[in-house]
Structure formats: structure tokens, C-alpha cells
Image (cartoon, each protein chain N blue to C red):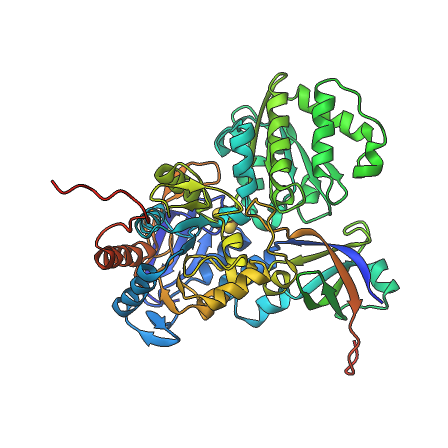
Length: 119
Length: 448
Ligand code: SF4
């Protein structure tokens, strides 16, 4: 069952240091496919750290691994991921005549992905 | 570490817009590596450590190894034949290279756009509408006693902004450093930057504009309804307290990030903050500066402005520059499938543009200049490997406060600079076109 949450794209220092090494390396791929999520939201959706979730917007979808954040750090209903190939999948190309696509505060459908090999 | 070491003092880090020019580098000249970067933050250390010389071909054409000369010929042919070419990127290269890129756009009647359009482009639009009360980072360090960070996370993106300029350093009129400053941080989530603030104001997503407009009303002495809290997550009492502090400080500064520009409201958000800074100047001194990401994105704004009169999203297809965000900006040109070729310099749109724009990059011939392999170089028809600015290449970059800084490179690269490659492309395109491409219907000069 999917829920609607608000996704914020942004930067992190780990992303900054790994992109200096290579944007094609495993470390960068791992960082840009990690989704920070409120721990209460995760518990309600039956997710634990490293569980897979599918995010969907009208532009596209992406599967990420989640990482819990306490409510004081990330309020319920808010998600955070670093920019990279997966955040691009979720962004619409329309800039409303400004040149700037929206990449913060996107409405996304969040759905746990169950696979046979466990979470 | 080898025997052949060199120390470069006061070198410049070009990883982020702080452009710190107090780096002391220890360079191993045999290995062509920087072994130590004194004074660099965690990002700067990674930047210097990871930019040794990698074994990469000088150029690739269609994935096959080529010489730089062969690649120049292939790139020039693509640009000379294109009807609506896009030149994009430019925020991680020198002003000298940026200048040549603008000249190529002018010559081929193309579009030149920089990463500003997907960064502080909306702030650039707002500057034109509202104006900008500005200051250098030096003035902020020496004078600012109230610092408001809005919609940004400098601890992770510009770490030395705190320690070198805006939070902890002692300044001429800030003798006790941190103790003499009040630091406010406004964001939708707690980040590693939050502990640096005395006051953290957590706004609900998509309500920055409403908070800024309510602050403007309070500064002007108007009444604001307490229901503002339901809409924005910020109580009237918190806003009133902030307004009292803003009016009574000696020198206030807003340092604002992409939490305002990449969000619903875009240039309206930046414009609201700039207008608030203007309003506050009736009471005391206030300035507002966008916090810039890439090392020379500010240089890109400056160079494109000197040369065309506009900061980004400039089209030359009528033979003179036209600026129109939404029409001549890269995401729009690619998403609408209008560009028929792209020259991408020191930037990686295939890693961060919206999906539809990346899909179009796969359809058209793309030329890249980059020191590293990236998702964009991987989809390029012609990919040049170039030397890294600041580490191998000298030249000029602009700090985020529009202060120009001369680079002091650490060691030589076997690869050409962006400026050298672009100059060769420009000269070859000029030869192919016989001068500037004239727009259809342009008056032909009368023979004398
Ligand atoms: S703050 Fe920016 S410019 Fe300064 S050392 Fe760190 S990454 Fe480099």
C-alpha cells in the first residue's frame, strides 16, 4: 500500500567526498540510492534500515534503500535523498518558465518493495 | 611519499563557492599527486586527494580512443552543422575558458547556459526584479553580528563558510568571534548545520515564501494573524522575536541556499528574501548573498554577463543575445527536444537533470570536456579529457561574493586545459563557417 510523502533532494558531505573520487564508483552509487526516512514512518510501513522502497512521481520511479532518522531530525512524512541518477528519475522536466526543475519538496508515493531474498 | 616534493603555499580550492585561497599543498611531483592539503575542509581534502593524474585517453570519439586534434575536428563538425546547439555547464572551469565558450555560442548562433539555471538561476531572476543589497565575505566576517542562514546546509556543502567567514571567526568589529554573533538557521529539517545556530526555525515544506512575507509585514509594523503557525509551522512569537533581533542588530546578513530556489515559488522565494533585506535597511544595515555551489559558478555569471548582458540562458540565434529563462535554459531546451547538439563543459547533467532532459541528451550528439569520467562523458559522442582547474591549470575564478581570485596550480597535467580545447574548437568552427553564422534573413553587408 503506497503512502504520499514529501521528498527533499540535497547534498551531503559524503556525497561530496565520493563524487571527487568517481561518479561511476560503488560508493557514489550507494550514497545516491539511500533514502533517509522518519523511524516512525518506517515502523508503520514495516521497514527497517536497508529495506527497499519504491518512490514514484508522475515523472518516473526509483528503488532506494532506507535509513532511519529520529523525529527530531526528520519529521514524519519527510524524506531526504542526495542528488544523483535516482533523484533524476523522479524529477519532472517542467520548469514553469523559470529554467529550474523542482527537486525539493516533491510529492512522492512510497511503497515497500518485498523481495524473495529478504528486506 | 616520493623524494621529489614541492610545497605550494596559498593555493586555492575550487571545489565549492567559498574558493578558499589559503591552502598549503604538499605535492609529490613524481607521482603527480597532492599528498597533503593543509587548511582544507573534508570536501577540499577529497578534492585535492582525488585529482591526481588518471590514465585516461586524451579523447574518445564514439567510445574509441582518439587524439585531441581528431576530437577537435569531430566536435567542430558537430557544432558547425547543428541548427540549435546548446553550450552548457562552465561552473567548474576558469573564466578564461568560459569566455571562449561564449564566443563559440555567439559564432554558431547557439545558446549558452550555465549550471546557474539549475542552482541560483531563480535568484538571478529575482535580482533583476528586486535588486540586491550585497557585501563581500570579508565585510560579513568583520561586521555581521546577526547571520541568518536560510534553506541551506553549509556544514556539509560549504564547511569553511562557518569557520572562515560567517560564524566563528573574529572580525574587526566582531572582536570575540562566535560570542559576538547571533546565528539563526531556517530549514525544513535538522541537518549537521543546525548545531551551529543559536536559533533554529523549522518551517513546514513549501512555506518559505509565507514566512518571509509575514516577516516583511511585521518589519513594516503590520498585524500578522497567529494562524500563520498552522500554515508554516512557525509561531507568531518566534517571528516577532526574529524581527526584533533583525531590526536591532548592527549588521545583518542573509546567506540563502537552494532550499529557496529549488522549491515551489522559486524566484518568488528569493525575491521575498531580497525584498526583506531591503525593508530592513530602513532600520539598520542588511545584506543578502546566495551561497554558491561550484567553484566558479559565480565566474560563469560574471563572464556571461560581461559578454552578453545576461547571466545565463542566453540565445544568439538572431545574431544578438536574448535572455529568457524557461525558453533558453538547458532543462527546457532538452526536455522539449529542441537542442540538436550539446557542448558540455565541466558539468554532469546526466547525473542530475530531470529524466526527460537526460533522455534527450542520449538522442543528440554531445561533446564533453571533463577531467573525470562521468555519466555525461559516457553518453558523449566526443569526450575530451582535460586538466583540472586550480590543480593543473591557472586562471581566474570568482568567489561566491564576486571577488576574483587567481589560481596557483600544483603540478602539470598531460591533458590540455578547457581553454585550450575550446580555443581549438572555436578556431576550427570559424574556419568551417567562414566567420559567424548569420541568422536567416539577416541583411547581407554591401560589397564596397
Ligand atoms: S570550504 Fe569549499 S573551497 Fe573551502 S576548502 Fe572546503 S570545499 Fe574547498
